[in-house]
Image (cartoon, rainbow, N blue to C red):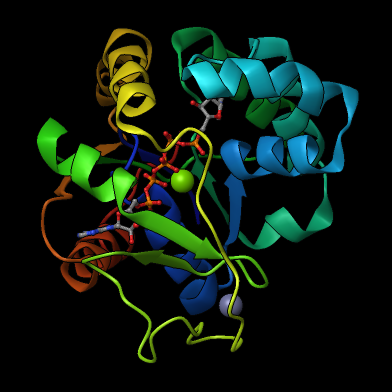
Length: 220
Ligand code: AP5
Ligand code: MG
Ligand code: ZN
């Protein structure tokens, strides 16, 4: 299946996309992760993206559309993909429609994850990831079983994102409400939108996503 996880910063898109990847073998396509990899590699795209990401604004459409178009052309996405953080405005959604049509792919569901703004700020400012394997943790909601040691790989180094401070989170939320939230209308009008309660705990959110995947689909 091919799905979009649509939701504000901190909604749990990355957390759930990684779980779906493990359970169903679908590929997580996160433009945020791909841009952060470009920043870490010091590429021209990465250098241009970094200042924009640190401000919480959107990287130009042609950059992210190019990244996703390349990715959707690779054979491993044929078994299903989860778009995490793309599309983020109407122009990107229209570009995605053209890409999917051109590649003979369909979209099965767009899952909107609803979470209160104040909860989002708490989630993001407490978030960190394992430097070695990328497993995500949270100071309060998801703590490693042994303090300071990654459950998955045993790593002991952890990273916090440069844009995970309260000021930038609020700016990212503003951008989401202004530019990305209109996509709820865009996809509900086409009959593929499913809304879930992103305020529930991680396991319950996974269960709600599984219900959507099991339910009737009318791919577009
Ligand atoms: P991106 O990396 O996409 O960030 P984002 O959309 O702001 O979302 P986050 O990754 O912060 O949140 P998430 O929903 O993945 O939450 P997570 O699962 O980690 O984008 C970053 C930047 O890149 C953008 O600002 C922009 O500049 C640029 N960019 C990216 N894509 C772009 C595009 N298409 N166009 C233009 N620019 C683009 O969860 C958060 C925390 O909460 C974790 O600690 C987790 O453990 C915890 N948590 C998760 N679920 C729950 C739960 N149910 N209960 C309690 N805690 C939970
Ligand atoms: Mg994410
Ligand atoms: Zn790890």
